[in-house]
Amino acid sequence: MLDLGRLRALHAVAVHGSVGAAASALGYTPSAVSQQIAKLERETRTTLLERSGRGIRLTDEAHQLAATAQQLLALVEEAEVRIEERRGLPSGRLTIGCFASAARGLMPRALAELARRHPGLDARLSEVDPHLSIDLVARGVIDLAVAHDWDIAPLPTPPGVERAAVGDDLCDILVHRDHPLAARESVRREELADERWISQPPGTVCHTWLTRTLRATGYEPLIVHQAEENHTQVALVAAGLGIALVPRLGRGTLPPEVTPVRLDPVPTRRLHAMWRTGAARRPAIRETVRTLQELWPSVTSTGEA
Image 1 (cartoon, helix red, strand yellow):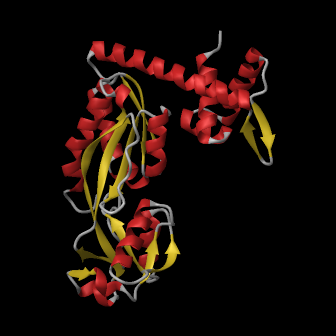
Image 2: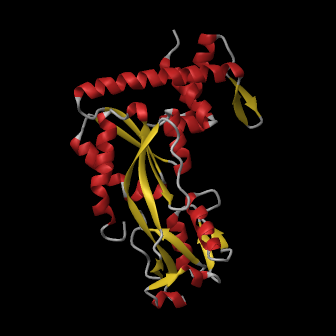
Image 3: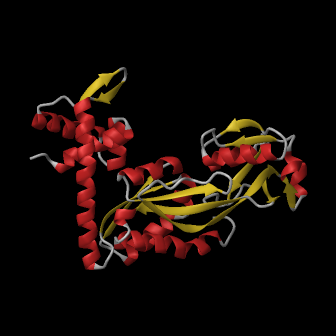
């Protein structure tokens, strides 16, 4: 009989594309994942992974087995949901994927509150890009995703995935304290045509919003520096190297060299919790979403979340 843990390891490699990434998602070491797959190869008497340049690729047999593993894991999830539903209390392991600023500004309080209220719940967090986290939920790799989008760049909801609003995160233009705009209470988008911008890299939700919005005003934004982390963007602004559009969630207290200015109209990104339809009855899902929604007003009340 095939071992479910070994099938789970193979499925994770198929989803994430490498042994290292699969290990991170599962909370194992790469060596442990490799050992699981080696044992599965001996059990099935089949080669499952082959070298491809500096990486690995799955054989055709491995892809077929990974697809079967996904079906089996879905059945296991359904059984776990039914058991937890009968108990009526959040319990068991809950894997959560969350983008960086929410992982810093929202999730520590949420996870601590869940641990206090429900000691039988083992919630585990991983930082994941919003676009990736939704796909991981749909594939059954993680149980819950906390993602975000903007009005002009909405995130799609795949079939079999449900979502609930958590809250709206406001954004500010950050400028150096000596910048002419620092004395302003607000600024319109049309007034920023000649600015040097600091932005997240292309392909990210924030970069897409910035470029689409500013192009709609009639000019192409001059992006001179790119940084994934908001804290890095703030540091670049503090050095006088450009301006940035930075959400408040997870931003923390700004350094004295940086001044926030309201952009009119105010850009807003929307936070969502997303989970598979098959897991919607699970108390752990319902309680986690409720906790996120309950904490949101206090997290954002200071404006320095």
